[in-house]
Image (cartoon, rainbow, N blue to C red):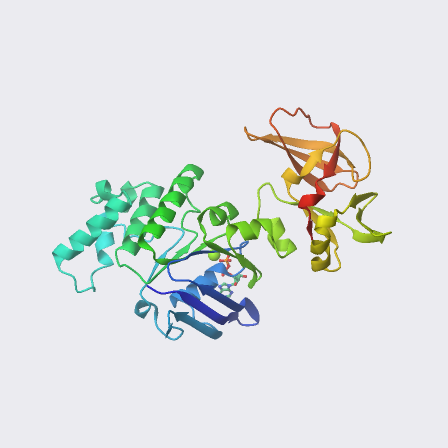
Length: 353
Ligand SMILES: Nc1ncnc2c1ncn2[C@@H]1O[C@H](COP(=O)(O)OP(=O)(O)O)[C@@H](O)[C@H]1O
Ligand SMILES: [Mg+2]
């Protein structure tokens, strides 16, 4: 096993830079998620690590071994894709065993290794079936088994659950994390789904347009987003943004947005200074509340839609200028489309951009 280092990894297609000077250190045994919108360069990065694409420049190291010029088969990686790559005419068992055909193991050893892995992945009861007789989730589990039997140095996964239904995704998520922690194989998992990233990753790399926006633990990414892109991309329902600027008056700091000003508490002055030339305030839906009265920091809004989630309710609101906000309330709160409400921020939790 080994950690992975990317040093100034760059991949261009003609004039187009798909991955720009990507630096990353993945510790041995870590589960790292590359997260970003479609087209941001996740697959290209993963393919470079796998050896399926040749980088334009930069280095890739597994432990101390520079693998940049090595062909895929010499890297001891296992890769799982969005749709399970299985031979349709072979049984699940034969598909899995194919991974070990050049391993030099005896038939008994192969059988034992396969048995261990298929029990772990709960596909031991379906080994005699062909892929067409398996459900989507079963096929993806067989593909994981096929990848894992080789005991790879590095496990690479490109949106392996995105074609599955929500319930199956949720259960496979937990299974994969459990398995990865048990086997301790360094893993890079690609997804555009922030919930998948937050729930699975030891470390998340948020990407946009071929660049790394932020690297951090799920807590860091959620609580201390370093860019507005990260703040808006992570969190569901998403963060609210108020456009405006800072005003200093007699030692007090305020954020002016439209007709309203938000008083900035002393405790947040450091964050304002760090952000330097603030143009927006970000507040998560749980940090806006429905206010009783119209006063400083209050905004008049009209209810656009109400989403009941059971343990909480999301109220979607528009202000007079048509800007949309989302507020989380307890499920007892009654609101109907067209109602006029007043919202106010909890500035202790404000993010400044
Ligand atoms: N072989 C290729 N030739 C030209 N452009 C490519 C090629 N592969 C990917 N791209 C472009 O590079 C960008 C990143 O693609 P990709 O890595 O697949 O993104 P993601 O996996 O994050 O959705 C996209 O704009 C895509 O169109
Ligand atoms: Mg992709």
